[in-house]
Image 1 (cartoon, rainbow, N blue to C red):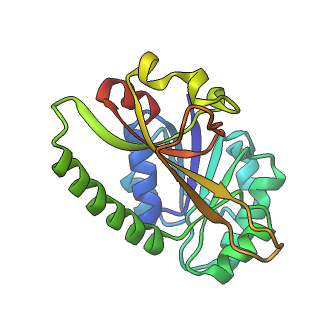
Image 2: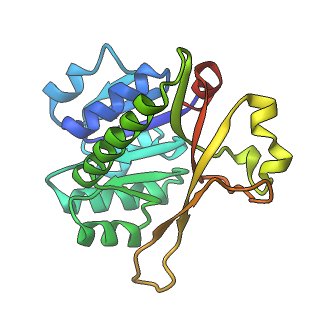
Length: 224
């Protein structure tokens, strides 16, 4: 079972914790404020209050053994930096940190964050994507039990061509577009996303690519 620690239980952190728990992820929810962690106690595996900037507390709850740590501290950027550093030093496999702006994102990357989330920007992009996707689905009129979704390419598909995978034949998935993360060429540069519409069979997928596919819900649900 996937194990995730969510540190900081404001609106963003609590939403992440509850959404993960609903998908049967083992969640450790952490905040110093009793009202916040107690509100989640019945819904997550463990809800506890402690100061996450104190590395001894993180060690006590074995945060370094987590598959993912979400640092969702909103108002205290110094604490967010310290917690991110501590989690990486303890060996957490992946640390996702919340940033309010690009300056914060840059600092968090420098201290070890594997991924950055900027909730307001991401929500705006997701809303736009949702509106566009809805319009496409309405136009195509997909039958009941079928959806257009964006999923992440799993590790076992890495370095395989679309012809080898035979997604349409084996899984009844029709790939519409690939969204590929391209690292920045310069040290301080911004990463970009390459979009590859209607790729041919020779296209090689990479683990972590995001792909738009149309297919039966029972197949798409496997990627949630």
